Image (cartoon, rainbow, N blue to C red; front, side, top):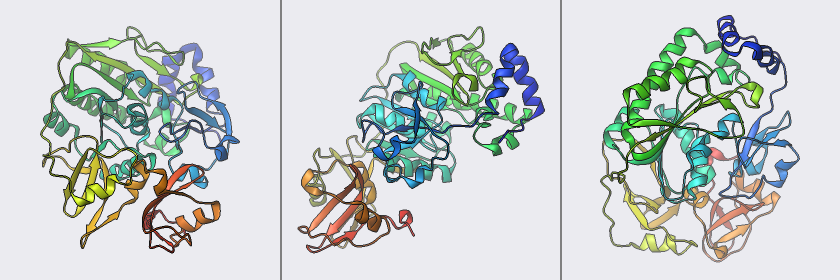
Length: 437
């Protein structure tokens, strides 16, 4: 279906693109192919059930691919269980530019719904710390759902204004991603409602908000750290013009040349930035990699003191290939991770690390998050068949006899959730909100 684009938008794009304008318009008359990437924390390639849908591999990220028309991810068990993630093609290129290393402290400032956060998690390999923030409460919960499904252990999920992050985390991060809320011109190919929301006034509002977010990111970045600013829009006001104003204000920040085989240089004199237009294989992306001059140790923040190991901690770690180093009990709930827990009453914390479970009348009831994010010993895992899998996600008890205790369940090599054996059958622990009807 051909998309009717706003007239003012088309006039701006004709001026911007010149001779390439006709090629730009032709893309909007072609079928849109969805794009995704497999979860490298769980798989070495796309799950077998998805591979027949692959049209071609992606030039934008090593674990990405375009799919044939008509793919419905929710129909695949491997999508439900975190084997792959649907992400727009050009957007999948952003995180690789930061060269994130395991052990880094990384802030994803505008993180929902979680495509870039889950990518960051893959690069961190469950080491270091990932702080994923989302200002809109409902979107923050979607972010958390995707973090759990993807199996991240080291994420701190926040629901805060970015100004509060600047106050609480000055010079606190090695790497920062600002995938800024924007006018969304690059979404026109896949989301018709974004066309209806577009206006020149909206561009101005977005640019003002982006400048504020970028200032807060600057405060959070340590000297010697890197900041990646990106949008999915074409407007110069939200891209090169914004970067120009930011650099004039901060002499200690410099652009790092982006040299990749995809896309094209940004508009002069900001050819060190990178743009991806629809003619380049994506829907649209702008990227600027900024380095903070100097060198300093990342500032630390107040953490919760570690208490003596409890019975529940021993019970949890006995199930795992690699025990968690830190635990935190809060209001009858147990959390675990490999980083000290943040002690901060000012921030709205949605989740710290892994929610292990709830302590009830002297017993620990393990949560879905624990099973999806933890690496259980092989003796604590049960591989189920397709029929048993369908029963499980429907909420049914499984007629499998195992010694009493907790077990993780897997299907086609992916963890799907957990259960508790009473010695004769497996009691279902799959969350009610996720169950099929």
